[in-house]
Amino acid sequence: MSEVKVHDIVIIGSGPGGMTAGIYGGRAELDTVILEKNFHGGQMVSTTEIENYPAIPETNGIQLANDMLAHAKKFGAKIDYKGVDSIEVLEDGTKKLMAGGEEILTKTVILSMGSTPRKLGLDKEDKFTGRGLGYCATCDGGFYRNKVVAVNGGGDTAVEDALYLSRIASKVYLIHRRDELRANKTLQTRLAESNVEVVWNSTIKEILGEEKLTGVITVDKTDQSERKIELDGLFVAIGGIPTSGLVDGLVDLNPQGYIITGEDCQTSVDGIYAVGDIRVKSLRQVITAAADGAIAVHAAEKYILEHQ
Ligand code: NAP
Image 1 (cartoon, rainbow, N blue to C red):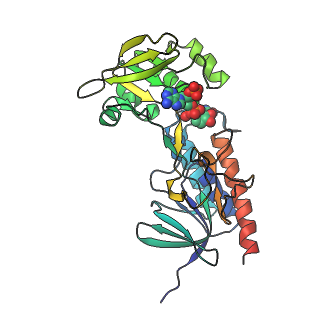
Image 2: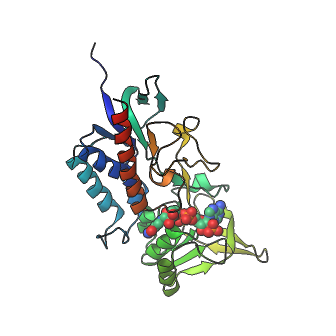
């Protein structure tokens, strides 16, 4: 009977944190495998412009994702497109993963599953997803050429989406629940210079339409007044929910479901690390996810040496 191979590092998820871990793991000549159940790149691939990654003043998410993967492969990391169903820590500290019926053994695991878009939680939201309602403006914005659209949210994603759509659609609303934006100042300035109409202090109370979305009703929280806005499309960009279900009960999570780690990205379980948007941190960006990837591999390498 052939013995099952034990990898040095298995990385779950291929956002910028996971792929940077791939680069560092491969370069350290560790047997490094990235497991990805969708397209490589994570949420980065739904961003049109990336202009705050050092030395690359202009790129887009898909390009950067492809470049990072090529970089990781160049140093010997492998990518396998499959989802992980479970993780178990065996008595000797080896981690056993099940992925589509296959058993994968590894000395260390780097969790890089990122987050998924938060939903509004309104009636018709699921029914109209793909029928006028979406969560990725850069993916689906092209369908709204010369049409009327709205973006809901006030963070970097929402403002970037609204600016992106303003170059395609005939009219763009940005619906935000407060009177100030969370988005960074550069984006705020660009928004102020654009023709996007901001609907301040407002939340969406109802999604309108029979077969597809035709508009929304918003409520202004300052005076409870309601407004009907007719729309061809609505993009919801109200943040993310960490994709940590796989490790719920295995590693410590905060009340919002983000993985708690030390500065070395170590979780509450020895030899399991978390990087990028899935962990508790103050700034979730490509650069901070990439930094996590480097740090986690450094810690994993030390763990592997100490547990020879
Ligand atoms: P975010 O920063 O968490 O912002 C979410 C926005 O949605 C906030 O404005 C929030 O309002 C609003 N919101 C949350 N729940 C809501 C609800 N139930 N109903 C209505 N509004 C709701 O999320 P994000 O914009 O997706 O960004 C995520 C992370 O990625 C951030 O760290 C961000 O800096 C980063 N990012 C960076 C870039 C870049 O640097 N180019 C681009 C995209 C994202 P409040 O403001 O009132 O809380």
